[in-house]
Structures are given as structure tokens and as C-alpha cells.
Length: 268
Image (cartoon, rainbow, N blue to C red):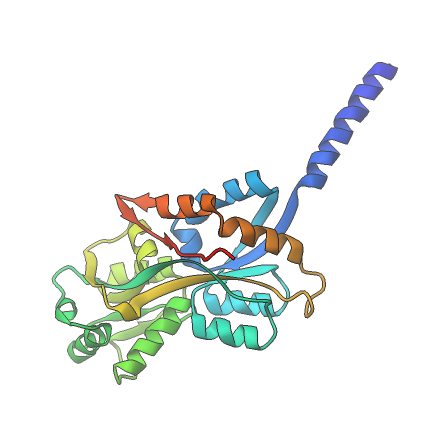
């Protein structure tokens, strides 16, 4: 009986030790990081190498930054540099570390009725869509993608409004579904478009303008503002995200032969 008791107690102690070793941290991330499938590749490797169980809060960039500012997460991974710099200036984070990039693209009906694909610049594509009053779906959710879209409309000299312009207030996947159902134009990050299954009659109609460069950055939440955040784990995760292993996994993640993200973190 004593032997059985010892075995049970030993097993319980071992389980407690494993549980105690597991370290949870929260990170708010953009929908494209999760919907692209990259998170499914990285998170198990992060846990195996560091012991960190990263719990993702998947939202648009605007909401991700609000969660960080409130101290509801330990770090953020987003893609809107002007918003990131404003967030840092307000004292919400310790620093900004670039990790990887892809690009934005315009998707639309396969026959491209607005001839957006013939434009030389992204602003020209938007001007063509507005001139034709062709249906256009906007995420309208203050995400990094939505922020970029608004900057491009402004640069094109257009304040989009009317029945042809529909802001859905949803994430990239839901917005793409709406565009597919309407056979409408939409701006998307490349990774989300490649991963999206319900393409319908849509196709990629415009790409390649340097202004469509889409950088993703990692920012730990400031422990001086929120002493409860797990800053040690945020730093440990950052070290992994800029490692050679992370580089290989990010650059090696492809879909139908196309690369979804390119690693560009600088080591210190």
C-alpha cells in the first residue's frame, strides 16, 4: 500500500512539475498571421524550444494595439507602422522589432471591368475602380489592412462613398467572403488571399507597387505601465522570433509554391 501511495504521489509530483514548467503568455496578432496558417507552423515550435505556450488574441491591428495599451496581452504582432509608432510614443511598449513582410494586393472580378489591372500604381487602380463605380469591399475594421487602404484612397484623392463602396467591419476572411459573393474588388494581404479557399470568380488584378509593402513588427508591452505583464517571456519569444530557426520556418512556409512571408528581422 505504501508502495502504491509512493507511486501515485511521485506521478502527481511529476505532473505538477510539467505543469509548473509550462509558461503561458498572451499575444494579440493580426488576422493574417493566424488565417494564413503561419501561426500553426510557428507556435508548436516556439513551445518545444522555449516552453512558452503562446495564447493568441486574433484581431485587427487597431484592436491588437488597444489590447496591448490596456495591458491585456504581453506583446503584440501587427502591421501598421504609423499606428505602431504612435502606440510606442504613448508609452505602451518597450520597442518595435521588425520580423517579416509580405505585400498587399488588389483582388477583383476575373474580367476586371474597371481595368484596375492596367494601372501603373495602386492609386491608379483605386481611381479606376471609383470611376467605374465598381463594387468594392472594405474591411472597415481599423485593421492594418484597412489603415493602408484608407491611406491609399487619400493618396488617390478620393473619399470613397456610395452604393458601390461597402465597409463590412470584419476580418480579412469574412471580407473576402463578402467580396466573393458580390464579385467585388477588395484589397487583401497576399498571405490571406493565397490561403483563402472561396475565391469564386475573383482573381488577383493588381500587384507590385512598392507602396503595397506590408511589414509585420513585434512589440512587447511596457512593464513600467503594466507591471503584471510577462515581460521576461515576451523577451524570450522575441529572441526566438529573430532566430535562424524562425527564419527558416517563415521563409519556408509556402502555399502552392508561393511564399507567404519573408523574414527580415535584424539580429542585434
